[in-house]
Length: 212
Ligand code: SAH
Image (cartoon, rainbow, N blue to C red; front, side, top):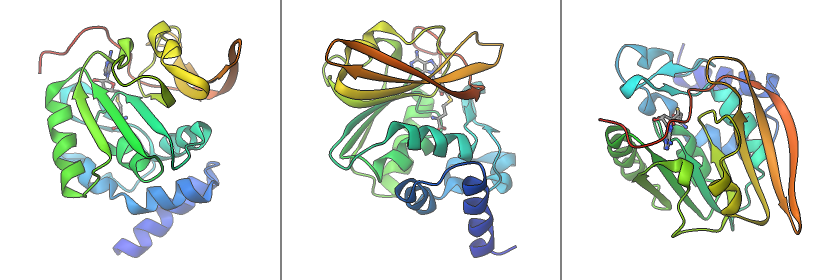
């Protein structure tokens, strides 16, 4: 299978799983997922499956990345926070849709590797930081959009507080070892609206920095 055919199948899989937003599909077409998957799984990068990355973490399934990005409804003026850089793939997709993307991970090793890829692909509007994302990034708040790519038991309070009024947060919520629910939170003038989107499965949001 040549590259064009792989890409066509990839986009077809995304569409058939409900990723229909033209801007999201275009952004995903621009990002070479193969570069974000290293080692023995690299040749499976164009399949619609989650794959292992360093530090015992995973790069999410592309259709889930697409559905989350679509639910986030990012506009070109938005300042976005992603919690859970992982491979950097999701942040790279967001970089094509937003004004600026802050992405944080508790593993320095992952942040360094992702930064190298952002440089390689000239994604100058992405800033990657090693931090415990459950506290958000108070210095850069408020955010127009927040995407959490690790599962929390509840939407973390500091992240809710760092969402601009009218802003949207997408977060998987649930016990780490059970099926979680993808939740879309919209901040209104006087509170928060919650919408349950679909069942998902993510690695858990863990407090504190990682060893690596
Ligand atoms: N978005 C990633 C996949 C994320 S996997 C991608 O596109 O590849 C979930 C990531 O969340 C892991 O890398 C894990 O280290 C990170 N994580 C878990 N708890 C965290 C926390 N409290 N703060 C920051 N990152 C966290």
